[in-house]
Length: 414
Image (cartoon, rainbow, N blue to C red; front, side, top):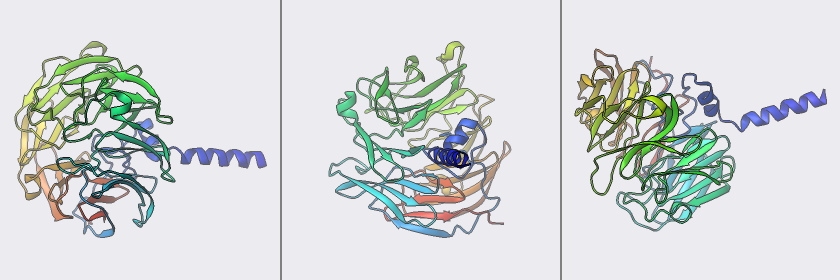
């Protein structure tokens, strides 16, 4: 009996070390709204399982003071909120209680350097099992114990990976975990690098030149699971197991190189968007190799910093309006909506028929949509000017400006 009880306790303890997000991601089931452990949610695609049918009252459940404006998004998992922050002297990495907003731990690191648009972290923290991975604008990568905030290990992109300089607008690509590998984009001698999440040991280096500002994704393309993203000159795919570069496509860029939107997996095809190249949809052939010429292009969506979302064969993106393109028909525009919220850069969170748009002015819009059109269900002002992507977890919407991190109740308004 005692042995049975001991085994049950061991199993329970082990389960606590595996975040619910990790379990759902491995199962392939519909994304729950209980967790948002990384950039753009569990699957890095902006999808959640549910949104309200009507615009809720949007009550502020709590707010927590912040040190200033910060680009980095918020991660939420297992009832804890993880965020980056910065004042004029230090970078901060904080852990809060999701229910109350009470600070559980905080780590600070000196940072008196300057950079356009502020010198604070840009990358969204990644929570995987009992670890938090956070990246500063200057390439300092930290692995924290999620329970205590203790530093487990840390790396410096310039010193450890041969990067010759910090990108003009800082390191922005949010860390990715796949197949037991932590993947980051240091630039320098390797476009991307895979590390052991537990020790920080380098597992492989992925060929390429420099880094860009877009985050990486992982997906099955052309029958091969691969990591896809941008270096400073091209779009590329890398084999997950070895880091071998499978393909490369040169991309037109402004000077200095500047591509921010994350690539999007559209049913095994690849959608890429940016201000210079607008929107392109690529297909794949055998052995995971991309077909060099895009199968469709569109001038309708050409974002500077925000990423579209794919819902089946519908592409929702923002370019002064909310625009819907048909990925099954040469990216033809199906509809456009010019409500106030959609006139400024918008980050999108979606289900199969509803969406939430949050813009840089701190305004949010709830809307329903299908192939035939869109209906705005309500718009509200939530905070002051902000560059960050919102986070939705357990029916709570997290947004921030230069004064507070706000936790809003997103319960259904019915």
